[in-house]
Image (cartoon, rainbow, N blue to C red; front, side, top):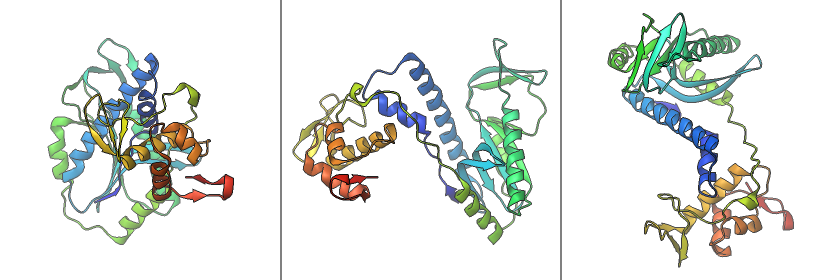
Length: 296
């Protein structure tokens, strides 16, 4: 049972929103590629855990705080016997484990994911103790990419490679039933989850291409009666969908700027005021009065 779904990383959403409206820099393209690869790996792992026993509460992408330290958990499975913590690393290619160091095939040392896992496990233990829970926590680093290979891999129960997943999944099918305590813990962790803070963009709004964009090819669309037409791929979309997605991008890129009919009109150049008012009133909450009316 999924109690918390995984959210697409905020920075990846921002880069996708920017890419439609201007050319990304080389550094931004590298960051986008890295984030997309990580997101792909996390989605793959979510599918891998999709067949786990029904007596399991799944929480994905938790961002928690313990004793002023922020830590993130890729996936947490609450089972009758224990809590299972997974750190997902979607590495591909050849890697080397030597003298406790995690290295690229060329010898460059990178951050050992085991250190990250142990920090998260320790902070999770402390957080559980603070709230009166004493469940055992079993922690793993998972490498789900089919083309990942770690030379000199240690005999370490905390490393899970793709060929080992089937046996590990079988071990999660041990008999037992979830109790009310398990559900209360899941509720608590969802309550304690902190959303990613809004990003502060240094790109002026005036430097971005303002329009509505095709979800398939990201090209600018044209208004066609009550719909919008993409001349690049010939796709047709309902007005409300594209306007809503564009306004969500606006709030993401400029969290400090008020969303008003005027700012929506400037951002969604090809949309009519009637279409904008309909989406604003139906999909957003109205705040303020008179000239101070804005939407959140």
